[in-house]
Every structure is written in C-alpha cells, then in structure tokens.
Image 1 (cartoon, protein in one colour):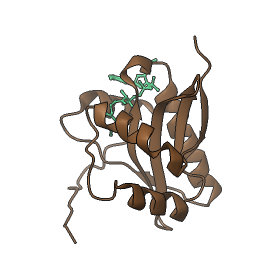
Image 2 (cartoon, helix red, strand yellow; image 1 turned 45 degrees about the vertical axis):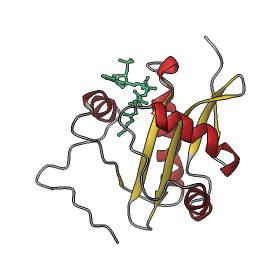
Image 3 (cartoon, rainbow, N blue to C red; image 1 turned 60 degrees about the vertical axis):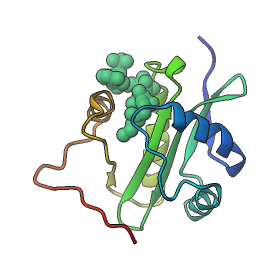
Image 4 (cartoon, rainbow, N blue to C red; image 1 turned 120 degrees about the horizontal axis):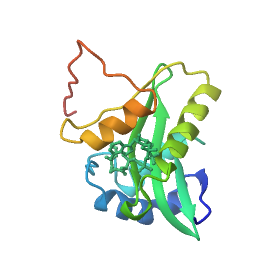
Length: 140
Ligand SMILES: CC(C)(COP(=O)(O)OP(=O)(O)OC[C@H]1O[C@@H](n2cnc3c(N)ncnc32)[C@H](O)[C@@H]1OP(=O)(O)O)[C@@H](O)C(=O)NCCC(=O)NCCS
C-alpha cells in the first residue's frame, strides 16, 4: 500500500482540496469556501486543518477550527480511490488532537441525513447523535 502522510492544510493546497471536495458526495461547497475565506479560516485556526498525501497528491482533507468553546470539523473528504484505508480516521484523529491541544473538550460535526456512509463513519469514530436537538441555521 502507498505511504500516506498527513500535514497541515495550507492555502497553497486550495485548488487540490476544492477539486477533492467537488468530487465527494456528501460535501456541499458553500459560503465560506472561497479561497480568501478559507485563507482567513486557516489563519484564524492555525495548525488544526489537515490534508493527507500520497506520492505528492492530496487524497484527503478536513477543515477544523473552534470558537473557544466547541471544536468544529467541516468538509472531511477522502478521494474515492483511497477510501476504507483508515485515512479519514487519521485526519479526524489529527483534528481531535489539535483541538485537545488548545484546550477544547467537545467538538461538533454536521452530517447530511442522506449520507448514511458518512454517518456510520462518525459513529465508528466515537461521535454520538445529538438526540433532542434540531440543527438550525440562518443566513447573515
Ligand atoms: C466518510 C469518509 C470521509 C470516510 O473516509 P475513509 O477514509 O473511507 O474512512 P476510514 O477508512 O477511516 O473508515 C473508518 C471506519 O469508518 C466506517 N466507515 C467508513 N466509511 C464508511 C461507509 N461508507 N459506510 C459504512 N461505514 C463506513 C468503517 O467502520 C471504517 O472501518 P472499516 O473500513 O475497517 O470497516 C469518506 O467516505 C468520504 O470522503 N465520503 C464523502 C464525503 C463525506 O461524506 N464526508 C463526511 C461529511 S459529514
């Protein structure tokens, strides 16, 4: 199997990561995902977002940050050619360790209800459903 390495997501990875997100079912490119916004997000949350690489090619990425109270992981995606090789778990572990290192004690993710594979992945990685809560949002 090819060697997989992980490292910090830096803004020069943007084009490769956007291509990865675009080809992944279960990821919706949305407001906050422009190059400038991702650059600001990475600067605001240094060392938390990560990519996985093999032979110089990005095959996985996750955005991770926090608001001082809860950690958030967004847009975790692994290239379809590289799934079920524990790369998703590797990136999530990296995100969780980074959040712990800055003193966070809980993190939140949102999974679309038509993404059963993604849901099983998060359950397998220790995440729980938030029973009794309804996720809500509002455009600003
Ligand atoms: C979800 C995703 C990130 C998982 O990445 P991955 O590298 O394939 O996952 P891992 O190999 O680390 O999986 C770890 C465990 O999670 C579970 N799992 C992962 N993908 C699964 C799937 N599609 N269906 C059921 N269980 C799954 C398995 O228990 C797996 O262990 P196993 O392979 O030994 O059975 C990847 O499928 C993906 O990019 N999907 C499209 C984007 C997406 O849905 N992202 C999540 C948005 S919330």
